[in-house]
Image (cartoon, rainbow, N blue to C red; front, top):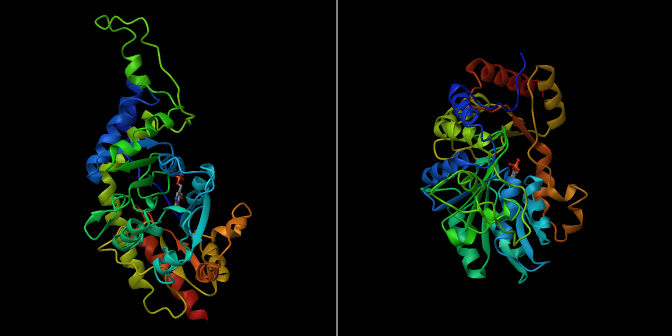
Length: 380
Ligand SMILES: Cc1ncc(COP(=O)(O)O)c(C=O)c1O
């Protein structure tokens, strides 16, 4: 048997939507992107959404919305994907690493208070693996200190905390639709906010700084009612980026969005099976305090002191594994910003292993993985 770590769940619905885009023969930034943005806003129950080509781009632009002064500081958890930090560097700001809570591996709110200094301007909490940060407490802290909050929701599309969708708690929410995530557009991301005025300028920033919608301009080329020789005119007033989502990606996204809740439910079912399967293991424990009836998770991870032998054992059985994530200062690019210790994060990651989890993982595959885990556990 060979079992992948992640696998997107794709079918006829996506193909049908792609066909529609082919028939219109408009593949770039166009009406499908606008439709996907509208459907996403509806799904989340949020005022405005802007589709981009990745969550990396989303995080970069979300910080750009504030025009923070160069050198200001942004608080992020020490364990997350590099993009949470590179978004800060793209904006010529400085990351400040906050230690993680040993149990949830999300940003420790005690340490957040300790790492805060007057030159901090924003926090980017990450709902690691889908485990929600305690956003009610975090938002209260941010309000007191007048900090912007950009939620990194790369791992939790469709997730909620205390009855409110993740991505709506902060001032801006950023999602990832990269191929492995809860839902996919191939590559893609979304910026959303209740504050339309805050993110509206980002429409230009994601489109090279152009102040007009090309799809709308193009549809007027041959409009005999609208007699305008300068229909081609646009201006660029800001240094933008080529960060737009395209219609092909949005077409996939529209089909995936319809299935998001059911894909999340299927992953929750797999997690329940895993939790039950490993409950008597002595050396293997769940990575997170999983509560699959309440939260949406992107990864199923475990902790095991014999991490490397277990990875090799699972590999010998055809079971793929991963590791999410190394602490950021272990990357040479980010090491210079590690100024105040984060002892928990720097230590506990060494026992983390990520196991296969995706909506189409079969019962037989889960049984096979659990069997392998139990066999390994019994050997020690
Ligand atoms: C926490 C986190 N933030 C941001 C990103 C970036 O997402 P994308 O690949 O869509 O740029 C990722 C990607 O895995 C991530 O895990």
